[in-house]
Image 1 (cartoon, rainbow, N blue to C red):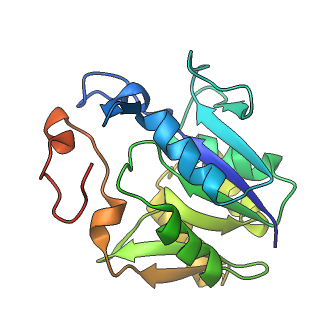
Image 2: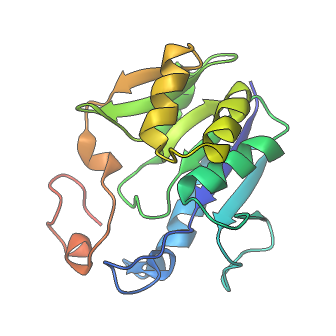
Length: 194
């Protein structure tokens, strides 16, 4: 199996009040922290998926811009899956600072040829910290031209088709997103120091 990675950064960050990608955690912007995590996994290529080109974009990653009108993460993942030349796509959102390379490595171990892994917390898929097989590209393309742009819906369809395995995570704290300024205060999430 071979891997490409994508860092989705296209959110509007309305609740945060600033671009989440540039939010500083322990003196490091989230975009840099997440790219280091992805690099640690050894992908053949790394994409940054955004609505517009970020000013901070490093030279060693490739930019994928949403086609208008943007349908949020659905647009970025669809375009990334269409662009990969590997068997799998690793996805980690920019606003998941508690995620670790070890946890993503565990997901990679659970993936197999033609099959990805999407973590589940309760009944909700964590579609932006997942591994998708190249075979999922068609499913994402069909969802993007439809009227339901929910990643939850496309993940359920992928699971029903046997293209992804749904995996109940043992530590939900690793999958937490930061959406508001209070989310990045020390102690906000137990067992997840940032």
